[in-house]
Length: 164
Ligand code: PNS
Image (cartoon, rainbow, N blue to C red):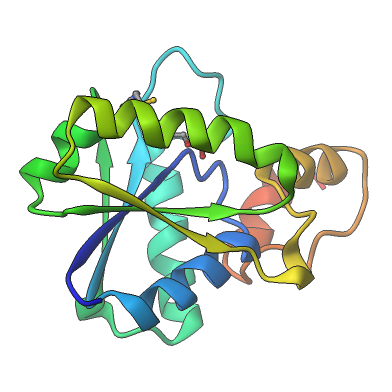
């Protein structure tokens, strides 16, 4: 299965859970567009520009071929964005059962909106099963150590946000 996949998300910030999905995604797809949702309603810790920078830096840190990863932002409907970028696949990671219902709902809604775009799931690496951006932020805020859970370029930026 080669081609272009869009890997959408909030990425506030990107975690090692995300980079593991990206790494696995590159086994299946020739090119992955990591697309940061540009949503003014959502209270984010990092600006979209900061999130995109961290994704780019993390891709370099991963040793990924820069020609195969594109970092972008989008607003509006994801399926419309995917179509504009000539991507027929939306890539999502699945962790525990808790993710399932939300992902099933989104995948079906997206299929309803555009049957030409298919959602493909990659199972999260068991090492990062419990890693989520929200938890990483909370643990950092409370002084816990997340050094193993975020890509190296993210850590100093995360610590700086919480004056740690
Ligand atoms: O990392 P997240 O916050 O779980 O990602 C959610 C995301 C960005 C994939 C989802 O909110 C999304 O696709 N938003 C774009 C708006 C849209 O297309 N909504 C209809 C799909 S259900």
